Image (cartoon, rainbow, N blue to C red):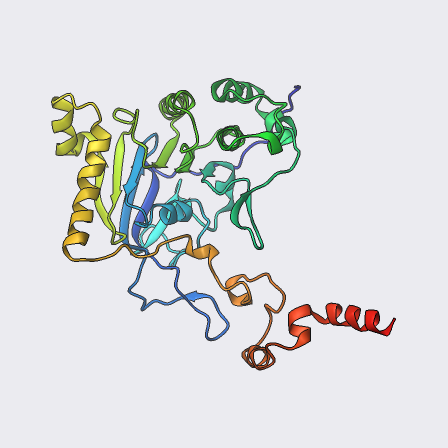
Length: 359
């Protein structure tokens, strides 16, 4: 493949020591749609995240640990600019803000050229009567995907191809889940990033590719000063990888954060030459939560991807089906008419039947 000169990336003003700065972040997916708006209820107490503070120095590698439903994915999506938060316009001297590289995580579009976010939803779609997260099956060769970006960074492209073991002639409709994940990583990491957000993206990788990826990320952090936040439940090979640790408890609050050297339990395990230190740290925290919930006979609350589970007939929640612009009166009329032939077959279906009978 040939190469082209990449366009200059937007410049980043001096932002100080911390690449990630979050202060007093509280977030909920609940919205008030009674007045035809989608505004988070400020009085809602069922928050996904509550009063979070997070600071990560440039070049940090932070492991994000928490039980299922603790809010890890939500936090990463906020850092990635996928969710608009309350007080999103706030300055750094405000009581609440979320800033990446010194800029507003949601509003500043310059971050799109310096921030990479990878999760498990890449290359999937929702199909009626089938479900969500259905893999796209287009017959596209890897060398034709984001081709201009591949040509802009040929050395980095070749390095990633070799590290991930990807054949540019692979066609997407023929790939396994693990091969798809490697293509996702390839395309997502080609452009040099200043901050990388990873949400469980190594689950489909084999052990060798995963270890090679972790070593490559360490090089990116040490040599280029990239800041990485990585949420995972797989702790093999991570005992010496992270520089920082952030633990989200099941109340959506910070249970512990800091440098690995400041965690006494980790240092104790290290002194004992424990074979799986990060696994032991995570289990110690999460087991305590689980035992407390069992003692109080509490069940884990449903905490799926709320932002994708709105009423698809409601345009105020991003609906896309026919009828999404209906008013309350129109919905009531539809409910009263339920069962009519036109409701079951649609107007075109009824007319087709009339024409067939007439013939």
